[in-house]
Image (tube, rainbow, N blue to C red; front, side):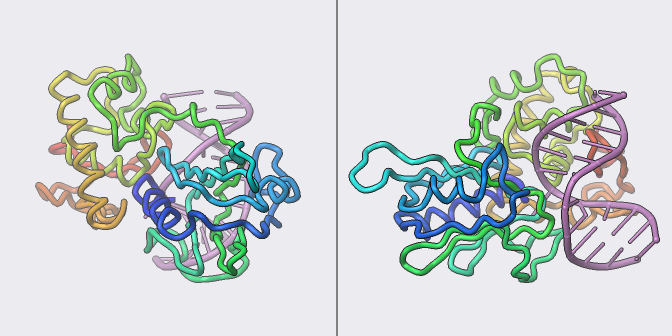
Length: 268
DNA sequence: GATGACCTGTGA
DNA sequence: TCACAGGTCATC
């Protein structure tokens, strides 16, 4: 999906509309979608009878805490949802985080990969055309670095370390910093005036200050605007596009394995 | 650390 | 028919 901002929107929808509701049944017919050995029967057994207790997020990973059954004080498993490239969460027929770029926003029952039916008659679905999303129980939450929304200077320095990898690759490495994806990263590097291909460990202190500021600002501003696709660079993020700041033709190349747009003039 | 693979839809 | 897509994983 969806990067941090869209996942956060999905989390907010879950929190506002799905908490406290009791799971009557689980529809998990797509075995490919269930990860780490999880089976259709297994996920049903684990969840039916429980309530959704909390909706959390780390980076792009959605985490739904479940309650114990009946008077049991032992909490249930954590339901981990990952939206992949094209997934979204649909509660009672309404989704969040739209519109999604580079995929269909249409409805097609075949794209409903995983579902939870509530005792009150409503439902929670994951709709995912490309099927790169995932459902698992008790995902390992320790594999993520600090979430980009709470990143501080110390976290940034730790993430960068002495890495000689391209700056963009480091920022998108979820084990170093969680939540930044292709669009947010291109946008924030454009705002920071930093070349995505530079060796991360070579950043001067003043450049790190600018980078951290850009991360915070980009997440905040694009969040307010409504998503990862609302950046100033976005409209120009196409072959032949021009830098909105200084008019130079944007550079299009692959950095860290992803299509990358940057300004050859002001990103150094 | 770069590359290809995974899966499927869309638009040129 | 091909290239490409807001993500992640295994492999060279």
